Length: 131
Image 1: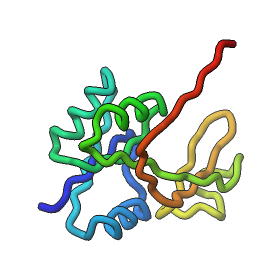
Image 2 (image 1 turned 180 degrees about the vertical axis):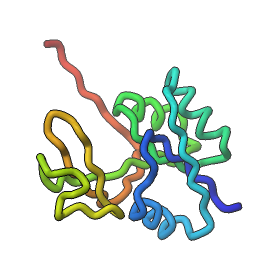
Image 3 (image 1 turned 30 degrees about the vertical axis):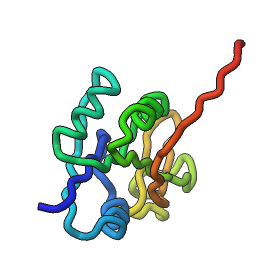
């Protein structure tokens, strides 16, 4: 069995995302999806480590990712760049939809997003001021 990559998301990876990871890490990888409600950031980290991963793609709130990259430096934390294609498309029947690279997010307006690349998250700064 090859390198284990944790996929921390409720949605499985797109084909283009799997191929991108393979180009970076080689074909001998095992992507393991972790889809659950976490109690806290430590729970995320322990879930990633428990499957033997030292690389994790995370789809989480920025505040959680901030704590992960600040406190658990033995894991490579990755985020996907998803570019908006257009709003209010007709879901997967949209003529511009590519199932290998795209996701449709329902909501008040339907959002059509396309995977561009992964970034390694090394730091996140949240700058606050009184309001």
